[in-house]
Image (tube, rainbow, N blue to C red; front, side):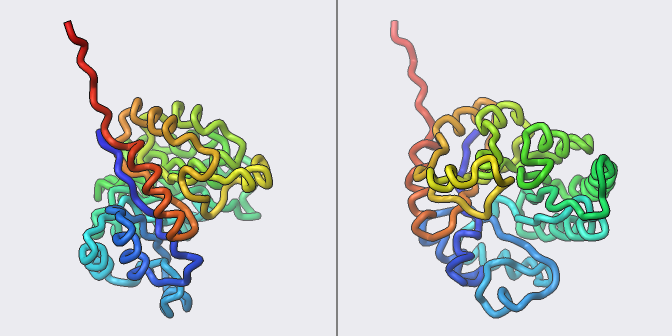
Length: 283
C-alpha cells in the first residue's frame, strides 16, 4: 500500500495567514494533501485572516471548494478536545466527523487533552469511555476513523495511548502517531510504532532538532510543531519501514513551523516513500 505525504496547516500559523492562503501555499510547494484544523464558534484571529483554523460554523462545502480549487485532498482534520469533558467533546467531535465527511477526510484526529481539576484518579477512564462511545456511534455511521494522538499526561506513554485507543471496541478507533510528541515524551518511537501496528490510521510526521531534544526531552508531553523532516533526530527510513511492515497505507502529515521547513520535509520524505522495486533472482 502506498504512503502519501501531506501537510498539517500549522505550517502557516506563525506566518499569520488565513486557511485559504495556506492551502494555496501548500499546493505551490507540491503537496497533494493537507490537514485542516477545526474549531467551534467564531474568533477574531481567523475571522480577520491572521490564523489558519476553520470554524465549523462555516459551511464545509465552501471549505471543500478551497481544497478543490487547488487540487488538494484532506488527509484528516485536526479536532483536539478534552475527552474527560464529555459536555464539550461529544458535540465537538460529532460535528467534526460530519464536517470531515463533507470534505472527504477519512480521519478525525484528537487526543485526551487536559485533565480537569475535578476529575481525579481512575475517574478519567469511565468518562473517556463514555465520550468515545458516543463519538464512535457517529464515526461508524459516517465511516470516519478517530485517531488518538500522544499529547498529554496519559497518552504520552505508549501504554497509555494504546489503553485510550482500546476503550471502545471499534475498528474505526485508532491512533494518529505523532513522532515528535512521542520522542519528546521520552518514548522509543520505533518500538511504539511496532506496538501500534495495524491500529495506525494517520501519522504526524514531526521531526525534532538536536537543540529541542536537549532542552525538552523527557520534560514535556508534546510540542506544537517540529523542525523540517530530515533536519532532526527522527530516522524516517526506519519509521517508514516499520509502518509499511504493518500495512499502513495512509498519509504522513508533516507538522513543521514554516513554509521553508515544509519544502525541505517534502524533499526529504519523497524519495524515501517511493515504491521499492523488487529484485527477481536469476537462474
